[in-house]
Image 1: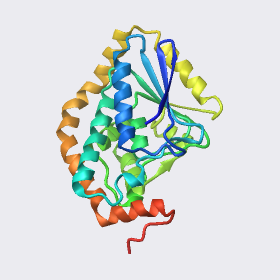
Image 2 (image 1 turned 135 degrees about the vertical axis):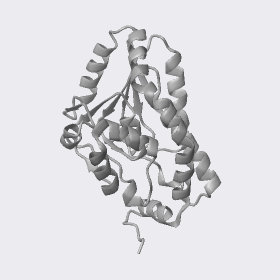
Image 3 (image 1 turned 30 degrees about the vertical axis):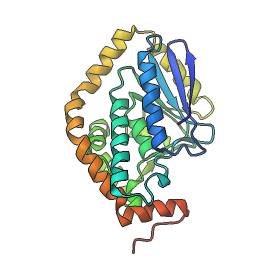
Image 4 (image 1 turned 90 degrees about the vertical axis):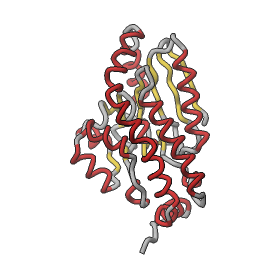
Amino acid sequence: MPLEITRNGPVALLRINHNAANTLTADSFEGIRNTLQSLEREESVRVLVFAGNEQGYFSNGFAPELFLGKDFDFNLKICRLVNDTALYFFFFPKPIIACLNGHAMGAGAVFALFSDWRTMSEKGARFGFPEAHLGMNFPSFVCRYMQDLIGISATRDILFGGKSLKGAEALALKLVDEIFPEDTIVEQTLQFAAKLAKSPLQVLTGMKRARTEPYRALFESLRGDDARTLATYMTSPIVQEGLLSIVEKRRPRWH
């Protein structure tokens, strides 16, 4: 997955630029993980900023073709890759800021959720989890973190309703930390990152560990069953129809 990396002193800006909607394939997840592994070893990099492309997308989630027409064994392999990458992202030892300069949906929204801070365009961007509209389930380890972040009731309403939120709505729920005008969001996010990066690396990694480590045992206990459950759903006729509806640009025909 193409990630355009720009280093600004101790801050690394990573722009996701895979395709117009930044949909995610197996190569995407491997690319994110490999890039993070490389940046983890660079002591000069203290803070990461993830941003989307100029076409209005942070990431629109799974590419439907990733699972469409595939069998359970293939889907299970992909779901394990997805979970492994998400957990590596969550426990990455350096701070990550998600700069939502465009839509963040589904799996793309999970990467935003698992970042340490989230900024979002006040207009022209949506943050959401549309899985319910496609017949899908949702990973329990991600749901648990989301409940801790914004509350059980808000998480329930977003997941069951397949909601996508505007900037002001996401800010009100504390799903994002700041909203900025579309034309300045990247610049203002980088300014915040530069301020954060003035701290010694050991302070940043120490605080990151304190924030994330309490989730490690729980997430590890859920990742396997979550992958199998997701693979079962992705192989089901209902989700296959949901994915096909995306490709054919129509509503699912479940009845």
